[in-house]
Length: 499
Figure 1 (tube, rainbow, N blue to C red):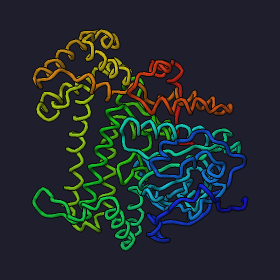
Figure 2: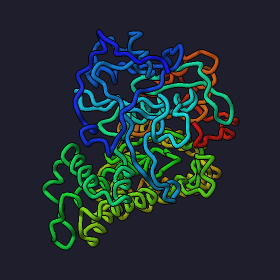
Figure 3: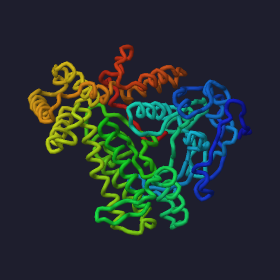
Figure 4: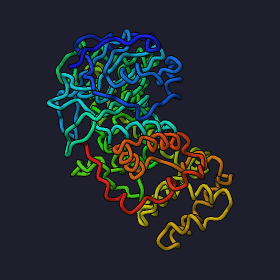
């Protein structure tokens, strides 16, 4: 391994002790493994500014080397954390950051993490690397989700090297620098609970509460009037955030693909972009992960899978909560929270935000009938919602009607939609719809074209897509093709867990 050394000058970041304060039971300090001849693929200067990083940082060769794992940032003490989890519903035992190395927590309160920077003690025989293909997808989708207003980890930069990485075929290496307030997962709690490490479990829960959920110290009022303790309050709060996240995914048509408990953020963030996909043709049973042979993580199953994962978290926290009934009540609060959040988002997509509160009984069948209609005609999800928004703007629904096989059922639904609008006492708010229903999402064929160009040494398409996806609700005439139907070959793209 090449000698590691500290950079100086503009890379002098103010660090603070975050997760690392928990100690050696939670992590292992280590150094990234260098890559030869790195080059920039993409940089996120807006995020650098948000994180209060030094101005011009991402323009320097020193940053290129540091964010590839070739040098150490001054004051940084890199580490990988240990966790366990359920994968595809089966207990997998100890896992951990197998190819992610945290550089530390900056003064802004965000952790920086290199994904693909080499082996760790938790690599389980893997090489600790990430390939250019999957790294481009993660980089672009992290920022696309953020622009859509969906909670997510972020991506600061992406670097590449010609170093070979062996998967189904020989590919080249890349490193994504990810950022998040915390990378703690459900699996961190499962790890210590499974090993009956009560002291560490308590320590982790206290850290998460005091740092990210301080209001949980006031407890949580359960249904039967008993005041739950802080740990029941934590479970309830995580459930509420997870419900919001699932509602966002379902409303925008996003499939995660690998909703294992070790891929669930304790902060309710979208994390670990692997075989994800935004729906093209609307299909509730769509499976985006080629490795998901049983369809466990099909699009329509995501909300229920999230509940199952929360149940695993609840089991891990039960020794701290100390009351099974209160634990169940904290868990069960997820279901109405998801329904409420999903209904509110769908009403916003329909331009009838008030109806979610005042006409719940009428809203539910209108939404349900629409989703059945979209599925029966396999209508393009993103294009439908954008056209409906434009139709609400000018009163001409023909462009939306033509998306369906036969028009009778759509016309019947349109009457129901208009009746709901009349009952709610408001016309659909077209401006709200246009700012809720995106023109652009990161479709698989878009990422695939950027990947093919990058493999040939041209990163301009990655950078162009980053700019387009940063404004998903804005019509961009120069990029009209990205708002069109996917090409026929897009349906043959297979995305698996391999990266």
